[in-house]
Length: 354
Image 1 (cartoon, rainbow, N blue to C red):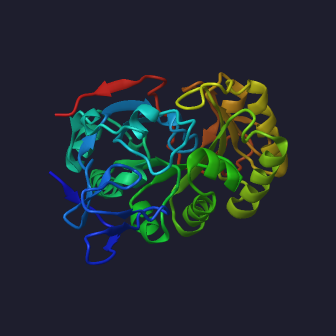
Image 2 (cartoon, helix red, strand yellow):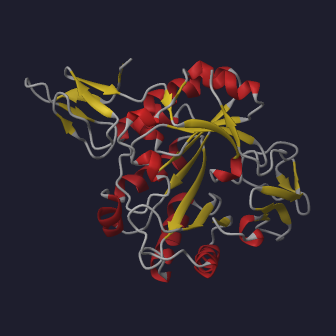
């Protein structure tokens, strides 16, 4: 059943409509689809063709999103749909985000069913991930409300490519978000993502300054494209000025995929260098991802350097927090923490809905 979406308006009398969900502002003729492929003009109305449909459900560790300061060690029920409003040539989930076959969406689930499944499996939260949840914002909002009614947290993993008018209703129902800052040059966004940097920076500032959502940020470092010391320094300088020292920043390793199979994997040394630049600039919590790096994945106190949360991939070890503070020097640590760490570990469990 087609679901009439929000954030669009009629352009003129010939049936064309203008999408106002993301900064592409697609003008769509009757029968045509927007750039994202999943929003379609049906009889002069914008229809979300993926509402209630998913590529599958899995229980993951929350650290996989990645979120390191949001109930560490807890389990999260993750799912996505199809399509994307960016055209990243390096997409690491291209089989879902670039899908042009709606038949790929083999699992169906109403928002209430997702909340019920999360509760039945003891999941602390539900994550909208794999492809960008901005595209299916209506489904996200309805599901988040159903989860909130059951006391279940919700998380979005997104590129933050969303308009000003859609930001508030999308983010107001969420508890945490990881925003993918793909690079720090507009030329990178235009050349490799078919998008723009400015709207993403606007979203980052909005979430940090105008919401109560827990925010973490991820940048995928691609050799020769966005990994120079100069770019990392400019990113870190902007980060400190606009988001402050306490928002966690993750640097992740690229692996050849989709349309960038000729680019080598990111060396661990590049991630370590970027982490050092960010830390010297004043960012307190800088992590490395997609590589085995216990030091770069663990959380330490910014005041006394005590080990607070030890991580080996997605497996937690030493726990040095007490009431959300460093157990050694009592410095408050920003984030959302339980009295004790979760015990989900590194497992990944498929969930069959219905």
